[in-house]
Image (cartoon, rainbow, N blue to C red; front, side, top):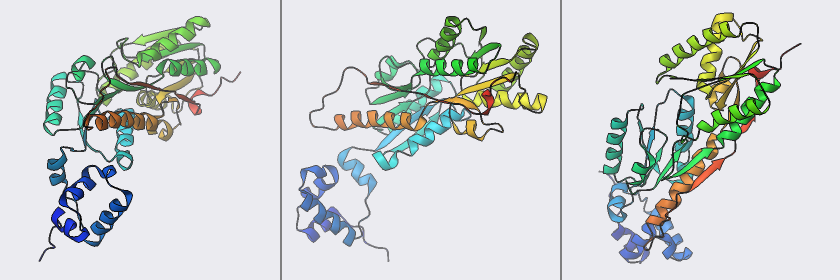
Length: 345
């Protein structure tokens, strides 16, 4: 025969406390003295109590679920930040429901409605399709990462500083021409500041440069084909010159590196490459890729900290809800590896 499920009544009988006191232990433990908390905790261990999560949700209305919407998983930045968010379970105790939107606005709206039906506590949004004013209208705690964030809380990298760091490192290699490849993104998107940082440094120091803002694709195969075509164009246009290429992320930098190695059998001396993220692919590439580290672990932890504070405030009897969203900026760290070795004279 199976073991009997332990109820609040059993715990109350064992400890001599009322069922109301036992309920307070689970839902508001700080309302009990430390001595009484310890008595109940010891009783749970003795009785081999296994918590009924469904019953607890029904009792206190807290699902402990967080919804996450990310654009895709082929970009190593997104897969790594998801990995880091999932690791926060031990710190915050939340579980996660994850959807990939693939840049489809209608699909993401459907996913959000699905998440809301599960009575989630809050959301973390990395996709770009739905404006923040609409996200704010859902009236639940939301934190965005690296996207337009006027009306909701966010955590972003100091993208301008990262753009400056990447450009300055390429300039120090002795490259004849600096090239930045990126999507033609909105100025409201935080990563646009990478473009601005590149442009400002090149203009300030009169560095020959080219900006290539174009459709960079929505799948690995599309991106690979586009970057291969761009490489052929750059090869022809700047033949005989040392080219310093700043890619918008480490996935693109690794794809460009692979195309160069496939074409030449090595990374030619006249190519210098830097990415942006410090996602694992930059370290695992056949030639470790220089990059601007976004401190992804700190971004994930900061996002969860902001979200948790908002959730806890809403569960108070008299919540004080902030009108102004919280915006946190994480400084980047330049990581100089083997794809930006100085030009040998």
